[in-house]
Image (cartoon, rainbow, N blue to C red; front, side):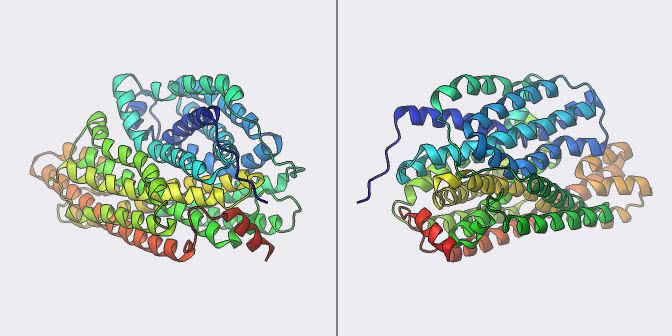
Length: 518
């Protein structure tokens, strides 16, 4: 005789509120400094490479440590890991605010990544263990996914407002009160949970996962940038070899760091890929179109952030709308519909011109956020619902690694397409203007540099440089949008194929275990 799982109590829902706040900050910190680089550059005078590391090191460290840190949480306690991570995150935030040199800020951002990697898997695996009723867990997962989506969407908004109103240091200091609240409320409202069957941590697996993740992600960033190809290829080879050795080792260990056999299961595999590509779309669109608001339309950070509010609102509501829709429709159909909506948002870039209203950009971003938010919410629910509670940590790590990889790839791949197309068009355009070689190279490197070159040259030649750069950048965004739309359509098809038959209230965990046995 089967018994219905226990319902969540008021204390459980209060615990959920405690869990999603640090998650919001973890995701916000991935993009919060995008609009703050000019102020940081004026005060700390970093090189161009140092500026890139200030942004990228956080996500690199976070993605590289998620799997290892989730296993530590499974063994020593997920609540304990969450609180330890909060202490490290708060300390790193204080160090970032006190930084007086570029290397100090880069180090603080790396330490923030460590703290985030410790906390993030615990947030999702604790949700899985706190909410045993499938319907209640779907709404809890929707709240989790909403915070993850909103964090990526509002990072530049928060950064723009905080930096314009206070200073770039305030973008770090705002983390500390939330971490202190977590340290006070966490022990009261959150239950401890761990995997009792996990006996030891395999250190070689930890090292291989770190080298594999950071090598592969760094290679993608380097190769899509079009520079240091030899270094990028070396990093790619090292990363892929480490990943291969990691997977091989996990298949031989009695208690693996990551249960890679989970990917044998169709629902799990399909949801992880959809999760990654949903975040990929949201972040890639954000990076490209925010630059258009600032560099082409000339909006300041605070003005640009206002036009990002619709996408933040829709990113938050998409998850809850998805939770309601799956009561009537199969998850695969809801997710595929959302991804098609995201494709329509990308397609609006076809109508973009250098003089387009910010409303067009806001609408495109809003549709991408709505569609990708639906995909993110339901993919997380399927991932976490398709495993038993004792496997929650590893499932959470897989989901969140997909999230961070999606963030990184959205920036690197779509950003790489944007830069490559822009450079090609501007190089051809400036050749006809007979500019000095150094100025032509600068103008073709980035839109920001083209603005500076235009001002330096002045006159009709400067105006021509600016017009060429604005048209090239707009065309590059259109090409990026077409690529994004095509990817969303393919992801929708992938979702329909891999997630067909996954009913909203089915016992996915039991089916998962049967597939693992066979």
